Amino acid sequence: MRSKMAKLVFAMNQSLDGYVDHQEFAPDRSLFRHFIDHVRDLTGSVYGRCLYEVMRYWDEDHPEWDAAEREFAAAWRAQPKWVVSRSLQSVGPNATLVNDDVEAVVRGLKADLTGEIDVGGPDLAQSLTALGLVDEYRLYFHPVVLGRGKPFFARARPALRLLASDRIGTEVIRLTYVPA
Image (cartoon, rainbow, N blue to C red):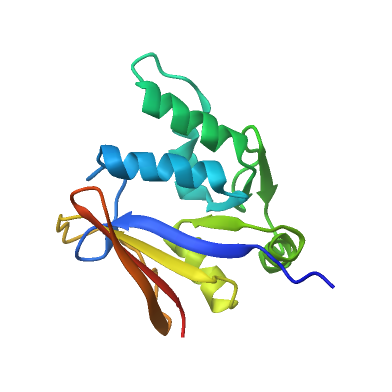
């Protein structure tokens, strides 16, 4: 009997008032290094369509990139991705399109794999939370207030228990929660 299974983690950058927005703020050098290492160690990622389309930026090299950006792109390209979408017809390299029976696919990934699988996107995370599939939440708070946008928790926040808090770089606090 297998005792290990993959852990599903929803982690995103957010403003102090709880919004996620990839255009309004970016990670500093320390946090970007943290994400390079994190992505390199992932078993894979499950993305919603919107965030996957944002992340496709990393599929092709850009001449203006520095060494860290090239390193992140290589790590992101290497990891398997499962993209949940009913509207996409195809996905990019190292990605699998999931357009129905998301629960069965994600349960299968958790059962068949070990390590960490990231969940990308608040709406997808909410759906997976409602199914009891998200094992951990990591909130990366940036010192900005947006007053609008997409909230980290797409609907009602599940009951959570604080597991850890730590500072990453000079400006970001990460709070790690598990379902209560």
